[in-house]
Length: 312
Image (cartoon, rainbow, N blue to C red; front, side):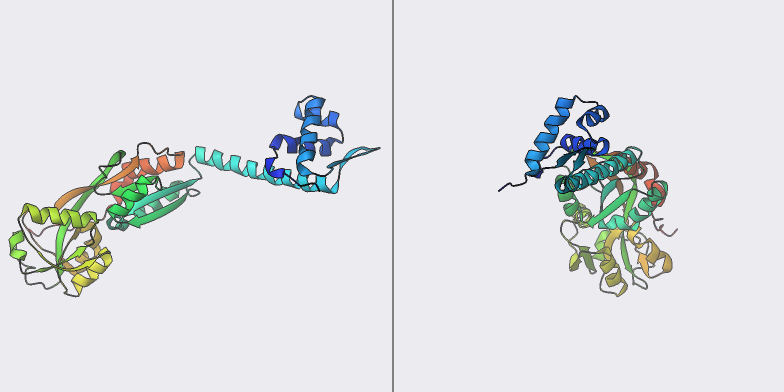
């Protein structure tokens, strides 16, 4: 019993069959493919051995395909179409007009990163973009595993060699609900918050780490209430009067402007950190990903929310 082994087929063998089908002879196929007749014959013999069935039939009008040959010719047509599609895709990628880009962003950055992506997409509408939102620890793992082309974060991972580009400032403030008893006070010290309940981000969050560094520098032991993995949840909890929070000003710009939250006037605040776009040094970026990196570095600052200002 003959068993097909077409998994070992080569495109040269398939093209030899296609050329014979088009010209009706080995001679015609050889001329079409710019090969010698023995070379075409060898390709056809090898292909037929792999198929395990006769692929060609000699007739008075020349060589024609058998039913099995027609099936194999269909395989060639599908492969040639796939090659053409891949070629087109590569041309698009080389011209920055197509391809895929994988972006990661810490959750605090989701208040401006989608707007940067929208600006980029207007220039390159055919580039497919995926966005992963996570905390700093999750993005660090994604970078380590080569899952991301670029990442937007406020503190770059020391254990991974990355190329870093500054986007802009990322101010951090302490917020309270509207009508809080300290709302009208000026120049408060961190120690004045000793009776307040702090709502915090989870361990592994860059905001949580920055808050702990601030309190440690001021030798302050806060009362920690609920721990939350979402800035949105923290904002809602502060609005509801469950406590106050240390948070990026970019995440609460709208709520402060609308009067739902207030920024407490604390000496030494805001704590200014920066937003960066990073990539692994050893991660090869295709042209669309490189274009996205360049766009974030050059234009990203324009999309940062307007940070609330201290009262004069």
